Image (tube, rainbow, N blue to C red):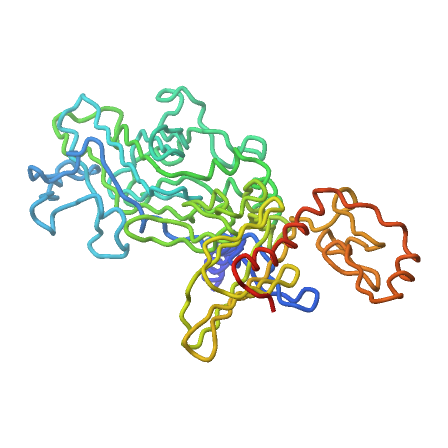
Length: 503
């Protein structure tokens, strides 16, 4: 009973060591009530972590390194006289192509990729296995290689951030780091928060050849996360804060390609048995790469379409990684989202000078024209129109298109300023006639005045004089403030030249 309890506690500890999901950020926006109306509230978001090996392409160098052409017999490393394993590329049951490194595990017998044997000894038996996503991805868990052969005595894991044009080492593996790579051996648990990005050489996965029970080689991602977030990743705020502010840290866990460089196979002894070279080869049954598409916290979904991964961008961003603002939403420079404050972060959406909501209502109508409205730097341009009625009330436009039926198409365009586009301030865009600027979004006018900047008196007859005499003397507005109002005042004359009447 004590033995069973001990096993249970150890198993429970393994499951508790890291949370199953360390930060969701799975919602990009939600509707909330603000000032008695529905509005969008934007949040930082990212796709869920998943098995990224489903979306990669694999290439081997040299390309003819896979066994089976011609057929070949292999011997067991621990028993040179057990030579009953055949590889034949033309027989499905005996072939070991590269895609078997990424198929479903748990099959019996185990499926695996296998190289040719070391028949050209003493020339090195070296293989480069390159995994490419054609997309920037972020690692969220350990990279795990499972070998069916003995684990290599020398191996280098490399990454690329530019689609394979340049490469940087991730980690070195050797049975003797000092002799092979002239590096002192080190383990990840010896790193500190200040050295967590150090490239190390480890001997933990290359020493010995009891390979029946010890088949995996790991690149420890979560152990590095734990240097900032604590041993059980409970202090994610610390990790997220560093990811937000430290580009090198973000880049360390980001890649477009991964390369596994197999430099020397397991030999099981200090000397290579030249009389039985069929004992020496590489065989990999599984590669695990857990991660997500890099979308710069501007998307919660990544789709695999026509053989290519791409973020489904939100926050008015676009591009494979949501790394630029959409056209007409470049009111400020693009910025990646922020993890902070936890748990929803900051969206840092791309802003346009204005945005519109268009609602179409039709009933057997025929559209005879269209209009494009661009409001940028206080300039309102109307073009591409044929026959319609325009009703203009401040920044609300209603376009009515004639139709054959009793009703016509009504298109409502409502312009409202985004949070970072200012309607008013206390410098150039001052509210007039005693109005008060409210969060840079609107002027709160005194009774009797209206308009965007409270510049319009809303009174009749003698009451106008009384009201104006009780206020401070009016000062002429700067040109930058009066220009949009002047342009809007030209709308009636534009209508008249087209033979249109306003409602």
